[in-house]
Amino acid sequence: MITGRVLIQGGGIGGLVAATALAQRGIEVDVVEHRPADSVLGVGLIQPPNALRVMAEIGVLDECLAAGYPGGGIRVIGPDGTVLADAPARVPEDLPVAGSGLQRRELCRILLEAAVKAGARLYHGVTTAAIADSTDGVTVTFSGESAPADGRYDLLAGFDGIRSAVRRHLFGERYEPRFTGFSVWRVSLPRPAELDRTVFAFAGPVKATLIPLSANDCYLALVAPEASPQHGLSAPGIAGQMVAMLAPFGGWIGALREVIPGQDSAAYGPIEEVTVAEPWARGRILAGGDATHATSPHMAQGAAMAAEDAIVLAHELDRAQRLDQALTAWYQRRAPRAGLVQSYSTALMRQEQGEPTEADLRLLELPLPAVQARLAQPY
Ligand SMILES: Cc1cc2nc3c(=O)[nH]c(=O)nc-3n(C[C@H](O)[C@H](O)[C@H](O)COP(=O)(O)OP(=O)(O)OC[C@H]3O[C@@H](n4cnc5c(N)ncnc54)[C@H](O)[C@@H]3O)c2cc1C
Image 1 (cartoon, rainbow, N blue to C red):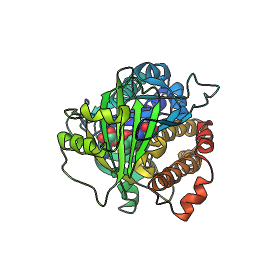
Image 2 (cartoon, rainbow, N blue to C red):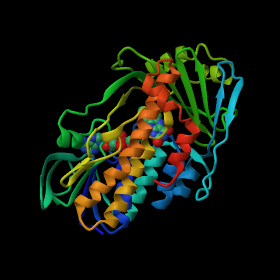
Image 3 (cartoon, helix red, strand yellow):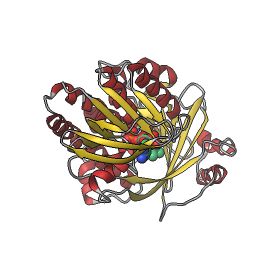
Image 4 (cartoon, protein in one colour):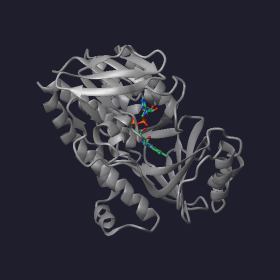
């Protein structure tokens, strides 16, 4: 088992799971997060079985389920509200449910408390200013108020998201985010009574996804093609565009047009991908989660993959005698799963918009339930 001092850059989902899992093993962990303590980006998310299994390993499964809307399964409806298909999800033997939706801020609160309870030190409003890797340690200086003292760590783990500075430190500008040609509009809304599982509905080029997040809340995401990303949109402007995009929908989804205006959670973002096509670690520095394999959200697996990266890192540090062995084994275990999620999600996105490539069609010969069943297996 490898011990020592670990610095984690990024206090999002991957970073907080890594902090908790490593601190629970007696490793000294500092986490630097450049945002203030109370800011969480994003609306809600689905935790598929593999994500729930990570939550169970770090001891927060019950809290996640209590804070969210446990269930699983999907329903596809027509633009008029007619139910077209219902697909219940299989509950894995080691879990109480097949999935759960929850508010992102709730998940981050639960993970942050778990990391602190395990003994990790969290520094908000702080980032690394300079990083120097050598055979006997990574020497780091910090910027930001209330930063830890500059010093030496045995490992630097970059879970700093799609615009990762750690990725740039490792690979330069080689793996910058790529715009996929699709964007997503999101808002948190009161949960309609009809919404008891994840619902998909299509009208023309717009895909609507509705996810229950708690007894009271849900999350609406609209995905549509876009020639180039928009900039500087305000929450009211985004809400207005969402109302217009819902025009072809009737039934209870169409009725959401009445409640969207005035929701200050309305958010917009281009869907971007990152694929680091070489080992994600060099020397004593690694990058994981969205930093190395950001994916389109079509399988609801991006955060699950970041969480898996984090827990598998802990497993491999447990197992190996030397850091280089642990990081090689970590990458070899993680790359195939993250790659499958990324390529299948992209294929689904293009197929839904009628633009699949030959390679997409070959991949999609493997049905979605088969891919989900594979991902539901232990990582
Ligand atoms: C619309 C949409 C819906 C999605 N739905 C789902 C879903 O249902 N289920 C699912 O599993 N996934 C979903 N995802 C994917 C998921 O959001 C990401 O894959 C996940 O958040 C990645 O986790 P991460 O820890 O790698 O990065 P992040 O969660 O982005 O965390 C990175 C953290 O690093 C911090 N940071 C960045 N730069 C620095 C720096 N220089 N110094 C210090 N800190 C820094 C950031 O502030 C942030 O807190 C969705 C994504 C989108 C866009």
